[in-house]
Amino acid sequence: MRICLADEEISLELLELKHAEALFRLTDENREQLGQWLFWANDTKVAGDSAAFIRSTLQAFAEGKTLAAAIMVRGELAGVIDYHAIVPAHGRAEIGYWLGQAHQGQGIMTRACRAFIGYGWSGMNLNRIVIMADVENAASRAIPERLGFTLEGVMREWEIKESGKRDMALYSILRSEWAED
Image (tube, rainbow, N blue to C red):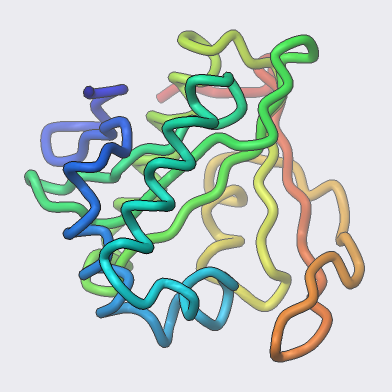
């Protein structure tokens, strides 16, 4: 199910079981890079792990708690973007994202985020969107900065990973602040 089009080469589709094999391959090919920032990457050992993840996102989607989308670039799975921590009563949600290395540095994530944010305003009636990124993950932090989000602060020792306690930069944008292109 297509959620939205970012442009002529990028579309966002509801993450479904049909994506499980490609998602596992992409995770496996990018495990080292992903593992620096995302705890789940090293725990995804077989395609069944990706399928289980997708089933959990579909269940959470049915409950209105998340919306996970496959980032499709010219028909190929390139990464994932999702809304989580959705609170409809307050019109807020958090975006998370990752992209395979082969697709990085081409503006794909910025374009995907821009489209997903637009869907959040129009399709989900959101008022506030948050993005959190490890303070040392410059590439991930560049996305909200490029899109006009406000850095609200740093959540000290927000996550505990094998590499130690990690600080997270907290960015937000309000619907009234969003500048459409």
